[in-house]
Length: 219
Image (cartoon, rainbow, N blue to C red; front, side, top):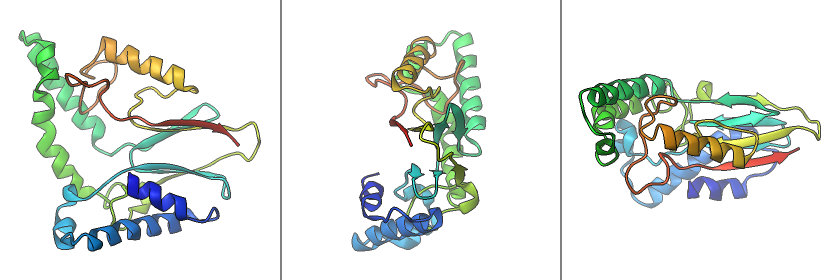
């Protein structure tokens, strides 16, 4: 994340999405080489790569770029760019936990050791072989362009944009409302197996199930 943020600080405002993807990939790839990381291992083991997503607004091109698993609102309309198998794995995890709970397991046990996530973990790692082959992510290798969601935005000064990470299960037009929806989810379904299904829940000692970033602005 820090490397991507550093790169964004350097780019010209007129950069295209294609040039950004090429440039940020080279920036991370150079970091690997400077730190003597074995590139051949990263080529065959994508799960060992540095990886992050980015939601970017280009004022020059009036576009939002969703590169990886992130989301945005444009004048209240939601756009997402989730991983292809994420919902399937989340459902499998939910089924495992719900079955265990029906057989008398304690919900709190899954907040110490998530047996549902443990069960799907091999499949999650296996799915990473599709990284920048079937879905896009910023990881220092050529980004899978069909996996990028590029959204044209109105140039009107009344246009309002929200960019956010996937740590918000229900994205709302304000940070306060998004946080409220998140807290409602965490209160009623902390394992994320009912009203919102995810590949992980809230673990003991954590405030939420995933990191979150939110920015709202008008253009």
